[in-house]
Image 1 (cartoon, rainbow, N blue to C red):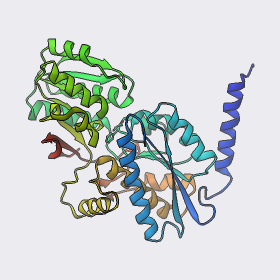
Image 2: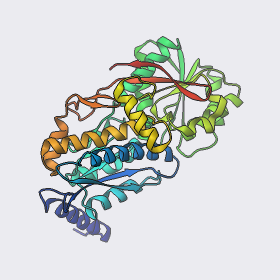
Image 3: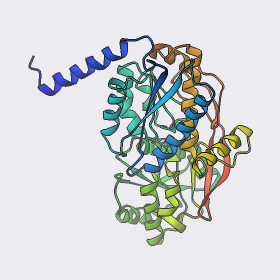
Amino acid sequence: MKIWPGQFLAAAAGAVLLAGCNQSASPGAGGDTIKIGEFASLTGSEATFGQSSHRGTQLAIDELNAGGGVLGKKIQLLTEDNQSQAGQSATVVRKLISSDGVAAILGEVASSRSLEAAPICQQNKVPMISPSSTNPKVTETGDYIFRVCFIDPFQGTVMANFARQTLKLQNVAVLKDVKSDYSLGLAKFFKEGVAAGGGRLAAEQNYSGGDKDFNAQLTAIKAANPDGIFVPGYYTEVGLIALQAKQLGITVPIFGGDGWESSSLVTIGGAALEGDYFSTHFSPEDTAPAVQNFVKSYQAKFNETPDAMAALGYDSAMMLADAMKKAGATDGAKVRDALAAEKNFPGVTGTITMDAHRDASKPAVILEIKNGAFKYVETVAP
Ligand code: PHE
């Protein structure tokens, strides 16, 4: 068999990664710290996702360290920026595992980026917890991959029922991002939910993340005369879509999923988003004491109100620390077993129990955009 140089290098790199991880019973815990890796979109098109998630994660690590750390050691968080770019997550996660020797990985928000890193973590037996990737395929990668959020078959159904029952829509259009696993999955589950509820699909159009002009798609959607438009996308494109829809004279409600949640959404879409809705994981208006304590500590540290990604980032780090304590070790297989056994973990985004697929079954919240702010509408239980 002929081996291409690239193949050889890849195989060699894989061998080094595996060797690095099997050397010690307590990987990432050499010296007096436990190293935890985080990969996030700190810059680029989804920068607010990564920044929020990172702040929530950092707050958890600081609180854990202030309380004495984990297994008698302080936690060292090593954070890598993937710049919201395809390909970068794989690169930085390989580095975190092979050069830094982290015991576990936290990340990512966007499903496509979690899907890039998950096979690397799985292959190296390094537990990975995605705080907020909702596409089912993420945890299907293998038994080392976990998440602390709900998944899109649920989120899609929640928004289909909201469209049918609350907004009373009969005839909905869908505008999705074909470059995003999240968008493709959520569009599919939403359409299934609408069909199950007796609604009709008026039109379906595609875009690619990074696009700026949606006039062709919106013109086609307008011609189909829907009574609402579901846009399962991320905030940068969603803001522009809402703006351009209004400019074309489209007045029906536009609504979407958690990918809308960003302080930049309204900066981009402005008044065009008034009266629109999206589903997400958390509302800082929740009066539960655990939520209000978290909101206060986060505001004190970062001078802003936490969003869903911040809350899920916090929960992902706290649940990892809890699993390490229960495992009594940072060994990948032991931490994996402890994560798989997590039950009724009290997160700020709700109670987290790992199901057989390493997903969390939790309620969704629906928010409305009102006077440029996100207002709590309702909570929908699974
Ligand atoms: N759920 C989205 C995805 O899987 C990411 C996301 C989570 C965005 C939470 C905003 C808030 O890609």
